[in-house]
Each structure stands twice: as structure tokens, then as C-alpha cells.
Amino acid sequence: MTDTAPSTPSRVGRWLPLAVIALLMALTFAMGWHKLLTFKTIGLNYEALKAFIAQNLAAAVALYVLAYIAVVTLSLPGGLVMTLTGGLLFGWKIGAPAAIVGATIGATLIFLVARSSFGESLAARAGPWIGKLRDGFKENALSYLLFLRLVPAFPFFVVNLAPALLGVPLATYVLGTFLGIIPATTAFSIAGSGLGSVVEAQNAAYNACVARTPGGGDAGCPYSIDTSKLVTTELILAFAALGVVALIPIALKKWNSRHAAA
Image (cartoon, rainbow, N blue to C red):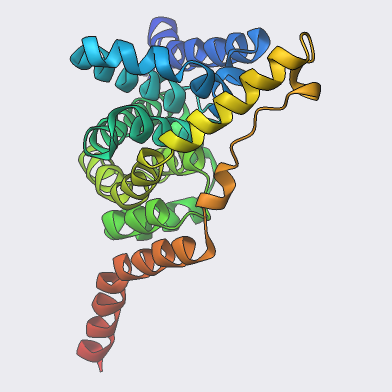
């Protein structure tokens, strides 16, 4: 009788990347590094960052892309801040492509880790219903993935992981992720590129407050740039409309198949 059970080394190799990511996530939250992903951090260092970028543009873009990859791979709550920051610091013509590349690479890394560690084994244990779901999703994987990426109702990290369970091919996942995040990333990069004067005004007000009340801290001198106003109802509806457009090929395919059968 042939033993088909995976060996211990193969199990270790399969689960090690996931364990490393989990460890890095735990370390990041334990050390409070995720709290640095705020506009206050970026704003208070705005002039220094702009000066560094002026002297080291290529290195700065590379560091930004690497930071974006880390944020997405570790599923940290800072995607919007990162995208706005890219537009603010580099302008949207550089910031948007850099954010798209970083987000796509980060999403692909976590997808590969999830697929190799638990995607196939969990799907096998989930029963026949997941098999039907996988078959339906895989048949129209690109359209479904574009819909999930375009409609902002679904958390980014969930859309990164779900395709690993549903058996989406790697090439389809990368293409769907890359194309699907272009509209929102570009829109928020453009919004970020227009925040320079807002950041400068907030810095001036904050520094003046600190000078008047030394040791006042955030309670006495709050630093606030409300980015939530950038996510308007009209913008969400526009992305939702794009998501519906992505489902049109599926609707046409089903319509044609029904009429062919009739």
C-alpha cells in the first residue's frame, strides 16, 4: 500500500510562510507599528519626506512600493492612507502606478501563501458545496474577481484570501487584481495629490498649538485630516457600476446558453 500522506518536511514547507506572516503580523500589532499608518505620521514628516524624494526619487518610489507590499501582505489597516500618501508625495502620475504595483504584488504573495498552506486542503474538507462554488467561480473567475475588486463593499484582505479557497488560477488572480484596483487607486491617488495645501495648513496649526501649549499632546493639540470625506456616495456608486459592468459577460453567457437550450 502506498502512503500518500504528505511528509513532515513538506508540511513544514507548506505552513512555514503562513507562520512567518502570522508572526510578523503579531509583532507589528504588539509593537504598535500599525499605528504609524496615519496621516498624522505622514503630515508631520511631510517636508522631510518631500526633501528626500527630491534627492532620491527612484529609491523613494522603491521604498514606497516595498512598504505597500508589506502593508497588503500583512493585511494591515492602512491601504487608503498608503494610496493617498503616494499621490501626496509623488503626484498621482507616479503614486498611482506605484500603489497599483505594490498592492498587486502584496495581494499575490498572500494569495500564494494562503493557497499553498490551506486553500486546497480546506476546500477538500469543506464538502461538495464548496466544489460547486469553486466550479462556478473558476468558470468566470476573471469577471467575478473584477467585480469583487471594483465594488468597495468587500474588504481588500478578504478578496485576497477568498480566491485561494475557490481555486482561482494565479494568472487570472494577478490580472483581475491589477485591473480591478486601477480605478479606485487612481481616484484616491488623484485625491491625495491635492492634499498638499491641507497638510501644510494642518502642520502650521498643529505646530502653533504645540508652541502655545508645550506638552499638550493630542488632547490639547489634535492633528486631524479627515480623509473619510474623500469616500463619497457618488464615488462608491461609480465603483459599484463598474463592478456591475464586469458581470455583464457572465450575464450574456447565461442568456446565450438558455436561448441555445430553448
